Image 1 (cartoon, one colour):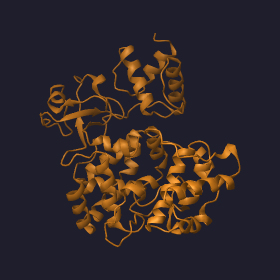
Image 2: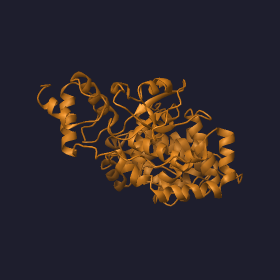
Image 3: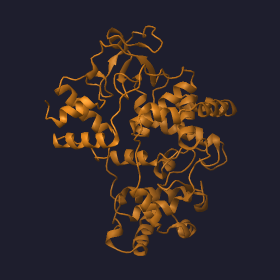
Image 4: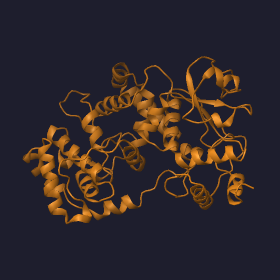
Length: 403
C-alpha cells in the first residue's frame, strides 16, 4: 500500500519547517557533492558523529529514479466505497484480529499507557504495510538525500535526512537496515524520520527502537504518536449512521459539530434504524459520497485520522476499518449506485470553480478537501443540496454561469 503521498501533504500543510543554520543550496544551485558536504556539516552541528557520517556515506548518493517517482506521485482518486472495499477487505480484518490476539500484551500496554485502543493501531498497521510485509525496498538515506537535494521541498527533506542520521547515531538502526519507501518512510506503520526520532519507543526493552522488525516496538510507537496527535481516551472516533431528508445538508461538514442530541432531532439514527444516543457528545456528519451515500458521525478522535493522513478517503477508510476490527457491522450499501462525475468532468468542474475565485488546489480531477469546500459553497449559492458531492447538475449550472 503506497500512502506516502498524503503523509508528505500532511507535513507540507503543517507550519513551515524552521530554516537550518546556513542552509545548503538545492539542486538548482550546484552539484550534489558540494551540497552533501554542507549537509554533513549541518548534521555534525546537530550532534551526528563523524563515525555515523562515515557509516552512512555509501548511502548518501543521488538517485534520479526517486525524483521521477516524486514527480509522478498520485493522490487518492477513488470514491470512498471503491477504496474502502479494497483496503478494508475481509482478509485485512482477519489479520488484524489475529495480531490483536498474538500481541495482546503489547496492545493492552499501549491502551493503558497511551489510551489508544488496539483496533485503531491494528488498522493503521494493516493499511500502511500489511503488518510489515510491504515496508518498501529502497535505502532510506538515499531517498532522503535525493529529495533533500531536489528543490521542491528541500528544507523539509533536509530535516528528515538529518533526523534519519540521528536515528543511526542513537543506535536504533544501521544505515543498511534503513530500508523503506521511496519517500523515506520507515517501519511497519511508515514513520518519516522526524516522527521516528521523536515518537519511536523501545517496547521490547532490547535497547533499540526497531519499528522494522519488532511488533512490540511498532505497537507502542504507533500508540505514542497517535496519543501525541490528541487522541481522547475512551471516546469513539467514527460511527456509521442513517440520515433523513430532514437533515440540513450544509451542516454536514467536518468543520461543524453538533451534539448527538441535535443530530437525532434532525432524523439521524444508527445505521440499523435504532435511535441515536441523544446526548451532548459533539460530532460532525461526514458524507464522503454525498447525501445518498454512506453516512458517519465523526467524533473528535476522527481528527487524528486526518492528521495522520490528510486524504479524506484514506482517513475515513482507516477509521471505518478500525470500527470493523472493534466489532462494528459491515457498511450499509447504498440503495442505488451513486452517480459520479468522471475524471475529465471533475477536472472541468475544478477549472470552473477556480474561475469563480476558489482555491481548489491542483486541478487534477481528484476531489480533495479544497474542492469539496468550493462545491458546497456553490451548492448553497444555487440552492442545491449542499452535501459537498459534485453532481452533473452542479456542473451544468457552473457551465451556464448559474442558469
